[in-house]
Length: 128
Image (tube, rainbow, N blue to C red; front, top):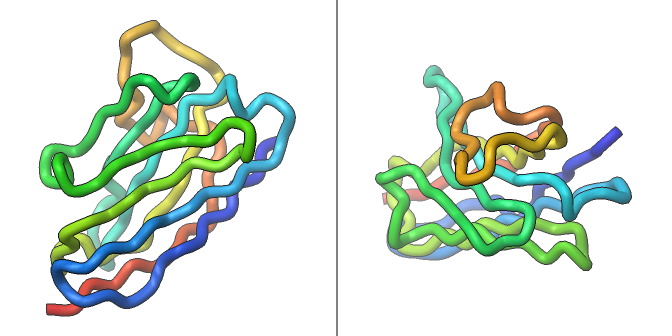
């Protein structure tokens, strides 16, 4: 089984930055595409970013493009989400997720159902 633990959330002023980390357990982390999702109170969980196993290819929700960067360090079994120019609407619980099944090359995993393992989430609050 894969366990994911997010960290790095907190309170930040609008325009500020945070870097989220997701530490994974397991021996095959490098085989898993990884994703970040977020969920604001009373709203559905939404896709934020995903990264392929190699870390070469990434894909983002339109509203975070240019502000957020997903990356991974397979040696450290960790995926990151660098969040810059944060806005109040970015406030949410952020979840790390792992796809352990593989899939179609060139396909970006943007659905909850594309992922097999989830972390418990870390709260990000952006004040105006």
